[in-house]
Length: 220
Image 1 (tube, rainbow, N blue to C red):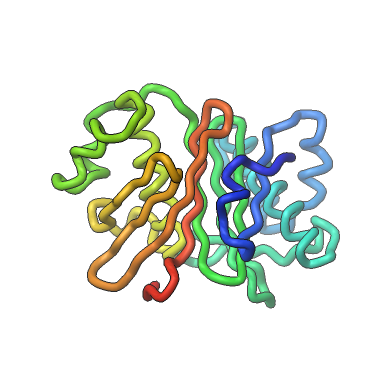
Image 2: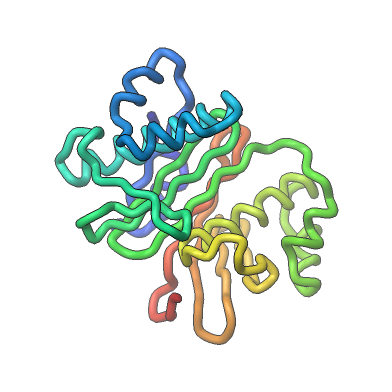
């Protein structure tokens, strides 16, 4: 398990841990799971999804075990009705993301959202679902090829959607992005007052993003 490269640019209140699926560690990771998590793991129909879920829970449990001075198996995780994962009985907020063989966990004493996306070809028509027409210029404005840019914009939208615990139940077009490629940060605005700061970085052949509430802005 590793610290992804964007960790240095985040607020000191956010802690991060990334991991790569490891077949030699999988049995030990399974032993950390709660009964709820074991049942969820068994319900997945594909080995790919089981590996992703297990890696995500392992990095989350390892991360919070350090912060809470507990064994990974004792970290009190529970899936909420909205699909997010609660750290029961604590002030911690948690976000878990996975793609390919990678997983990322972000935790903070305030709302936080994370995303990780493997750099692989995507249908360009995804932009119609993802971007408000006024944002389409970002596809050419950022210093990456179009596919890499599209995947980055996806992570910059999904991380705050997870932080606000709406996911894609809120249209991603409702979030309006401004992106500073040099600083590797973005701002996502919803409505008149809700504002999120998103840090991003490349992690080998993946994009990673983490969103936190902007200072002085409201959040849902």
